[in-house]
Length: 104
Image (cartoon, rainbow, N blue to C red; front, side):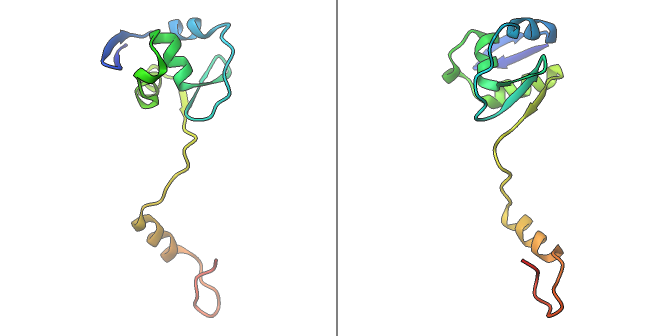
């Protein structure tokens, strides 16, 4: 599959990514991660290995999109942030107490 990471085109194949990560010890995951061969790797670590570029040259999003398209399971550690509209909607759907005030 052809993808662009840090403005450079790459032809990635799932089995080649898996082979590249064999024998690579996963670093502690502090952000986005990807499951490869039963192990969770930081997305930036995988990006560095498969592109041979410095991690500062690409974003986690670029690598995550490419790995997801290849069929890998990626996850994000960033907490979901509600928009004001989502927050208001959640409050309107909250069950009420007998006195009519929303439950906290």
